Every structure is written in structure tokens, then in C-alpha cells.
Image 1 (cartoon, helix red, strand yellow):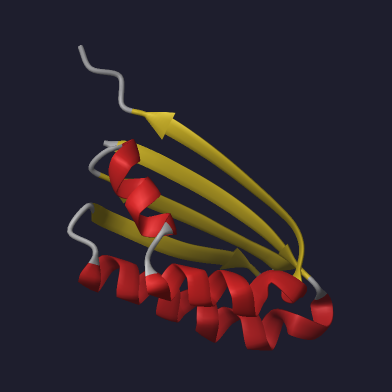
Image 2 (cartoon, rainbow, N blue to C red; image 1 turned 120 degrees about the vertical axis):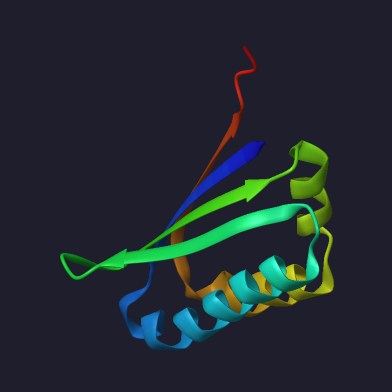
Length: 96
């Protein structure tokens, strides 16, 4: 498995517009990408402008394929002006 953790800081005036686009991207990824096993979207009332993603893919290649999908490119283009900051951290499974 290949895990991706993303934290967005959304500009306050855009949080209402951002969330439907984020949820649509997550749902489409789970439904249409065979290499995507999990795509969770989380928020906290204590940090209303923060959006946290936890994604699980078969491997790094499946994540790279996700970044090339039409739905991701559309999401990325539409939301770019709404984002104040973004961090992406990836993890590869430790095989024992």
C-alpha cells in the first residue's frame, strides 16, 4: 500500500465552495480508480479552514495515475485559487 496525507488550508471565503469539489473528487477517485482503496476527507470545527485527506493506493504508480485523471485535474484547476497552503506527505508500507 501507498498512503498519501494531504492538509489544505482553505481561504475563509472559499471553504463553502471548496468542500463540494473536494468530496466529488474523493468519491470519483474511489469509484473510478481501481488502485484507490480509501479516500477520506476530514475537518475539525476547531480549525474550520483546514481540510485533511487520507488516501490509500495500491502503490506509488496508482497515486501517480490518480494525479493524471481528468477529475483530479479539474478539481486542481478549480480549487487552486481557494487554497492558502497545502502539504502532501506520502508513506510506503513497510513490508516485513
